Length: 253
Image (cartoon, rainbow, N blue to C red; front, side):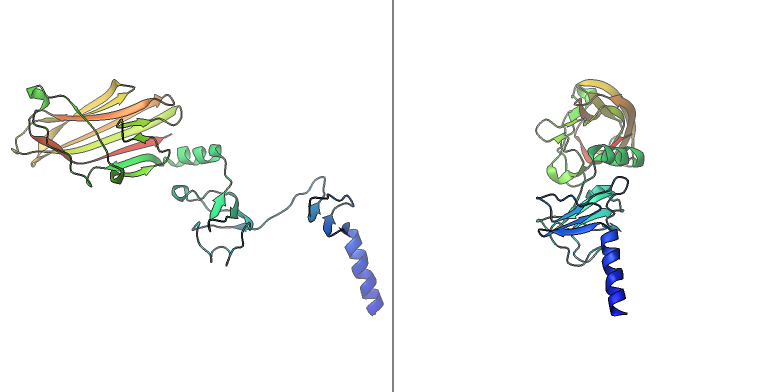
């Protein structure tokens, strides 16, 4: 009985066409490759690796406990804000998972889910007062941002030196510019938000004074060419005004 079991094991082993040759394990043929320790040969089949979900790029417990350097899997989860996309992934020397998704796949996800590629909030840094309003001969004020105010900048497109956003790729974009302005005298007037594409006005909207604040929302959807520069301006007809808070959201479709 023991001899029969041994023979069956040997037969099964060789039916799989596996060969141990100079410390190399070959499956599917008898053709060795000097640079490999394990080799798979097949005409119509491929290697299947585990399908697991990465929910945190730095987790050492999920989906694998104590992952070894170079461990590989196919990630089934998606969290684009944390660069987690369905694709082959591996555990790197920096103690986190790295996705092998292509830039095209990432762009498709951004477009299909309408994820904002730039978000800023002006509530962190108080803007200075502008002495002259536009009705008094004052010029529109360029929107300036500090690094603390930029909450999301997927393509690092915002230039703090020039106060402009560089469009990452040609396509349809929705640009939303919201401002809340105040006037030290609490007097009525008209506020205006402006959008410029390569220095040319392409959209503006006016708001009104309500309860000591001026609320203005500009929404513009347009086809924008790659590397065009978007900039934003705001103004108020009365003097001694400033932006109290505001947001800019840019969505790529």
